[in-house]
Image (tube, rainbow, N blue to C red; front, side, top):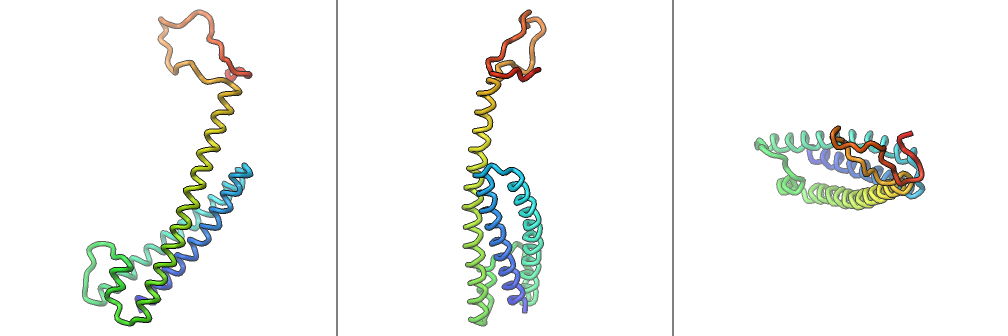
Length: 166
């Protein structure tokens, strides 16, 4: 009973990770198109799904602990699915449990790679924006603090096309 419930939780986690993977693709396309609203919408949906993942992980932990308590053990740390599978005696159930774990692991790895690519795209976009700003208004050579005794009498000139202090 507990193992079937755990398999169900792992399958739902896999489904959520597949949805997150689809959102990662959506975000990548939006980043390439420079569509900030689409990126924001995809991120909001991701946040909702992440809350669901957190709930499912809590249910997984609860189910795993209940399984061990039913066997007379009191877990003192978080138990992995592999460790739990060692106590499952039914070969069909054990195989289903390990297959669900493997599918979830593969989906999570795929999602991780997509998120790393999106992170690189974001960093490149921010680098381009900073470069564009430096070209337009010039680098800010003025320090944040000016010693009143060392201030020049004439104002410092910026080298960019626009006066950003106007």
